[in-house]
Length: 129
Image (cartoon, rainbow, N blue to C red; front, side, top):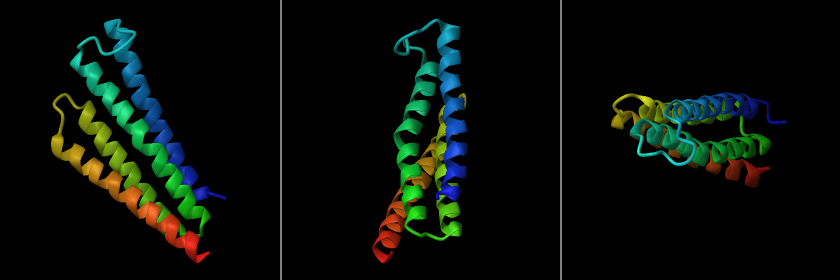
């Protein structure tokens, strides 16, 4: 069972849905059905959503593999928190009126660290088990 991973998968899914509604709301408001129509705010929202969709699923899979291979719950929680914080910081940086570049970088560093450490945990516990 992947009980701990399920918590982070649920939280990340809620954030994904929020980001989706940010895109949908702007599209409706500006009557743009495809592309970004050169709307800078829509472009930022589309990229926040897209970037999230590019990284979060792999993070969830790696968390699940680490947990299934026997990583301690505290380690999975730490990795899940790092991934969630990274994705939230990155999304927030995109959604602010003036993009906060340092927060965006911190979000990506956190995300990459979570991915790398989750991959190592999945591999190490998989080989040990």
